[in-house]
Image (cartoon, rainbow, N blue to C red; front, side, top):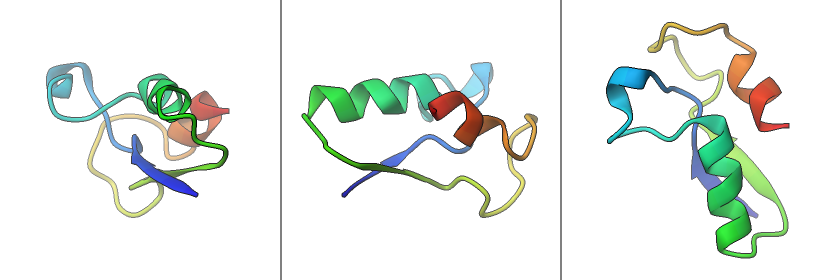
Length: 58
């Protein structure tokens, strides 16, 4: 299982954190079979809904 960051993101952090869609693409790029979106639901850092990262990734 591939562990890919993508749970906390913001336009201002585009050079630091991937969006959920970019995380999904990264998994496809490395031919990953399964992916776990890391940092999602761990703590509040970004200004988006709590469930938004996981909903956007799937």
